[in-house]
Length: 334
Image 1 (cartoon, one colour):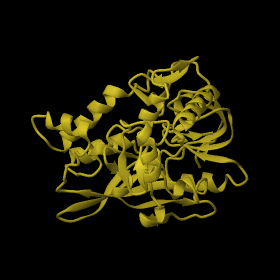
Image 2 (tube, rainbow, N blue to C red):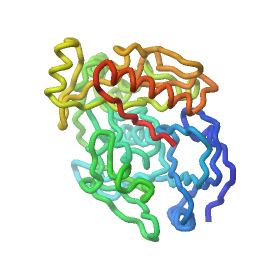
Image 3 (cartoon, rainbow, N blue to C red):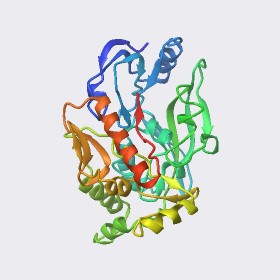
Image 4 (cartoon, rainbow, N blue to C red):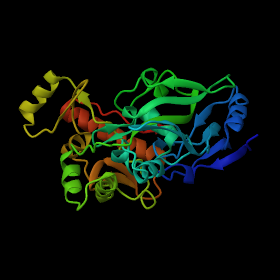
């Protein structure tokens, strides 16, 4: 059985680098260990932790943190056009993307350099540059509490939507993802629809999967802070989606407001809203928005989780007052 550690420091296990502790902590490295520890945690408050890249701790965690380190990947099927790849939850996300690109398998390259683990990717339905991970997931495998066998949840049953899934709602705290099964193309079609990405990609001497990945990494590195130097979780807020009527009313007052058409309505870049509300590069005590990307809230060193949460709420209030839009957090606040 996986070891249970008491009063485990979480500082190196969350990308904000907030120094709290977990009353109990375990990092199972196999399915059997995970089943044992999960079923023995009855009555305990439990939290499943990936790489801590989308979480904000505001106090010590009084329950059990389960930190699965189940790794590996395998091809489970293929034909002349595609490969079905199974990747286990403890794999680093960007390492998986790099592996696929090196193998000439298309579909995930636009999601390069997104922090986190493979197991976390369906929860948030991670996305970037016109691609969401749901577009490539066939099914998700995992463990339901009180069960001793692995269940499969199809793409449709995952209820994916913008930065959302069943794992954030009905199955929150009731299901631990153990593996994700992806459909990848052997004859990939490059998606470079985003203007900035298209410019960087077309500037490369050769256009292929590797240079697309290089382009995404180049753009992300140019505007995002190094997590090792400045604690952050990347985008702190979701881009809000509003109704067409609401958008037209806003456009009467803000003619240069940027927008993107989405399935559910009109998507407004949260970064633009935050900047217009006066928060770009603003700092209070030891936390602030990143000067090159106001969507990112940074721990400049020594900030507490509560200070970061309070700072984010000030931004939400300002944007709401100015635009009548409430920004929803992407980060999971504990």
